[in-house]
Image 1 (cartoon, one colour):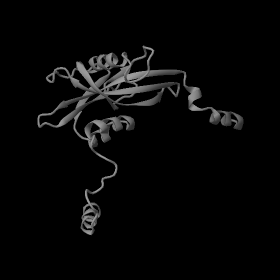
Image 2 (cartoon, one colour):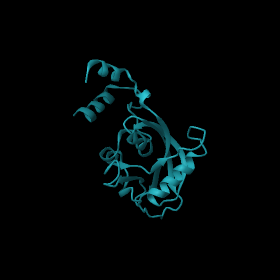
Image 3 (cartoon, helix red, strand yellow):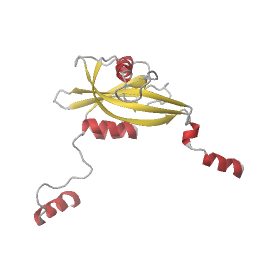
Image 4 (cartoon, one colour):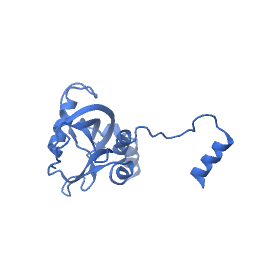
Length: 189
C-alpha cells in the first residue's frame, strides 16, 4: 500500500464507514433458583452461526418505529418477540437496564442494543432453543459471566447480578488505627 492511500485510510473516521444504524432489544431474563438465588439466562450461539460458540443474551433487531430510546413502543414488543423466538419463553419486561452500541459488518453497521430486565410470565416454563443457539445456562455469578460473555454484556449482567457492588468500598464510621489494621490484614496478608 502506498503512503497516500495509507494516510487516507487513517483519516477516514469510523463514523464515515457506517452506512446503516439499527436497534436491537435484549431480554435479560432472570428467575429464582431452588435455593432462592437470582439466576440469569445466557445462550450459546450455534457452531453454524456468524459468531459460533459465543455466549449471548436473547436479543434481536427492532428496525422499525420512528422513536429511538428505551421508551419506544416498538422496542418492548421486539424484546418479547426475540426472546420467544430464541428461547421459547414468554417474558415480561420489568425495567430498562442500560444500552450500548456495537459496530458490525466490517464497520458498516452501528447497532444500539437496549437491555431490559425481564421475568418469565410462568416461572415453570422450559427453555426451547431456536436453531440460532445450541446450549443455554442459568448463571448466578459474575464469575460465570466473565468466562462466557463479551465485555459490554458483562457490564449489563453486573448491574443485574451485583447491583450493590461498588468499585470502592469505604469502611463505615470513623477511620481508626484498628480499622486500618483490619483492612490491611484483610486485603494484603
